Length: 268
Ligand SMILES: Cc1cc2nc3c(=O)[nH]c(=O)nc-3n(C[C@H](O)[C@H](O)[C@H](O)COP(=O)(O)OP(=O)(O)OC[C@H]3O[C@@H](n4cnc5c(N)ncnc54)[C@H](O)[C@@H]3O)c2cc1C
Image 1 (cartoon, rainbow, N blue to C red):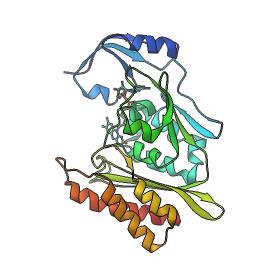
Image 2: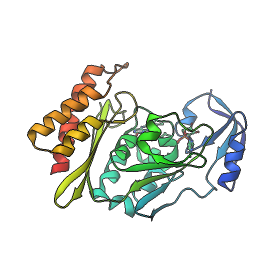
Image 3: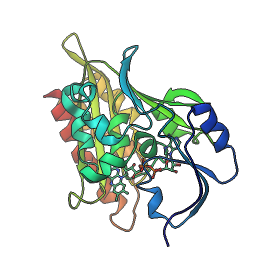
């Protein structure tokens, strides 16, 4: 059986969409690439295509990406391609296929907090915020670490436009497979130094999380000794678990290698 939709609506404003969402059994549609894999019944499907949250633009020092922007629109946008040496262009290119990236939306990718997500790990390594219609704006890490705002609509992803060097790494069995584990790192370039390090590890198999201990170590220094300490701190701090594919222990070891490689790339 396929996904069934009993009623389909295409509101013209966010306000209207939000009101419709409060109905029992109402759900937001992103690109429906994931939603359509289930055999559920959605009573009221709310398509956000007409509410005006698909644009990508620069505002107040942030790259703003509308929640209905497709991953491919984001990947090929000048603001993204020119940011951090094309870091996000590159990271997004690993999300499955061109066909999927042409349909999947930024909102449908961030809101479900899937553990396997490469996209979330990549943006978490930058100074990123998300905005919801009612709950407002929050840091991406706060969104990931707390319950998702209920019956709300994600409207924007906001990436601080600052001079960052970044690297995204993953391990998977083949190109068309989910990451067994992934890691993304970035640091801000300031007066010839690398500061404000961010270390994100995902597919553990839980959703991406920051290793604040590793970040602390790298903020003290990034010579060989600090790099070793940062990798160990990450392995101690973050939880790695087994699933049907790989053991937590294996994931942890691979994550250590990925983080070390990514630090090396950021240092250059
Ligand atoms: C075959 C396959 C392979 C994939 N491979 C990868 C991969 O390698 N790496 C990776 O990172 N990702 C991967 N993904 C995930 C993909 O990138 C998308 O995140 C996912 O498919 C959902 O995108 P969508 O826009 O179609 O969301 P939908 O399926 O439409 O929606 C997903 C959920 O998000 C909710 N939602 C959507 N938009 C909003 C909004 N604005 N506000 C509130 N809630 C909202 C919906 O109600 C629904 O619950 C894969 C997905 C598939 C199907």
